[in-house]
Length: 500
Ligand SMILES: [Zn+2]
Image (tube, rainbow, N blue to C red; front, side, top):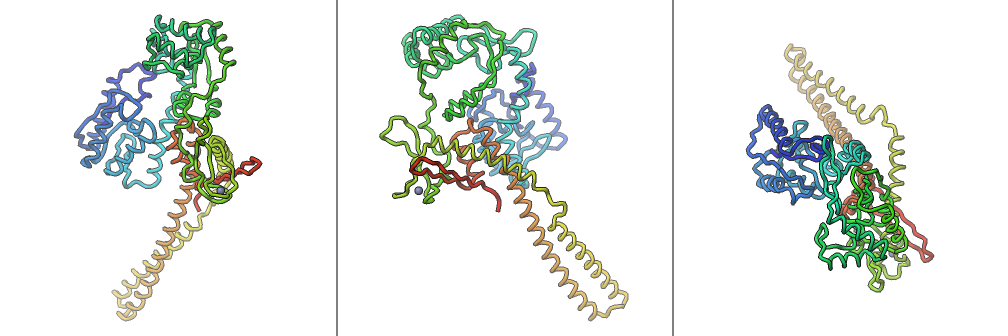
């Protein structure tokens, strides 16, 4: 039995982790008793980390499953197991699968070995999508409400503040931490008044031995302060994904798109004045800030699926040594091919846009393709089965004739032989039709899968790692081809991975 608090359980209810776990324990104990499940070990995750390594009981659980001695793991719902990055979820799923270990929840039992394709897909999507989408959706309304009421929604207070629970109501707000608040004001003045840049500010703070949240100050931690409306006494909302984007080294363009967050009047005291804020903003406008994301750490999200449209070679991702910009380019490796180099970012944007466009059209197309009311395979199958039933009746009939002496043994043998031939022929036809039907279903499923997978990529793109991007792109497209002519014109073709 694996017990773990989920973000959903306690965010808006004032229940402690222990209470949640003991409540879940009761439910599951009762469930196991009813189902006559023999629980040999109970693991309770008290810490609630996002990553696998910060969930010691989960690590232990996987260790135990890997011994191959367990039939299943009982938990409240599948989401308890899968939280975290989808790559880790994939790993967790694999451990369950290879050890033929079932996931048993009061709602449903998942058997990754034997379940139909459908359920397997179900699982896959629960693991990868549930976290990213459904939970967010479920939380959004409640959180919007709280944010618009000026409550602080984050898990960690910004530098300069500490969180505290609002007395007599749900939610948290921020309290000024005087020592840190002084540093915040100093940073705003250095930047806005004295015109010092992020890097230099960070350097000077470190020289003064002022610790930041992460120990040392850096360009990013200073920039984060200069750009945070929280110091004006405001609450910003829906900015979270943007932070993750920066950390994952996302393209600047997509970052700007996500920069549309909401700002509400907070319940906390401001640290700086409007004047300090606008001075900093003015200073910022004057400066050029190179993007802070580390693009050169990115690898190729289109590895092995991007080809030169002219000569068919796999496009190579390169960072030209001569330039000092660290911008990556795609280059056709074929000698003599006149395809010009193309910026990786350009290609990625173009493919993203193309897939978005394609998906929209494809959804319309799929919806307009009416399901035929009569399935020809099914009606053939019905007919064959009808004939089979009749022949079997006839066969019973001739047995009766034989018993009653209407048929001689010789007549019976002949008639029976011909009936048996007909029956086995029809049985073969039935088997063929069934095969055809399952192929058709398979194809239908493949068609319907490409839509959610593509949606998943597009919606979560900024949060995906390059490896994940590559894995998902490969799922939804067979390949993409690009070509850039001498006069700079870019051609792009995508080949969505549609079933034949
Ligand atoms: Zn080429």
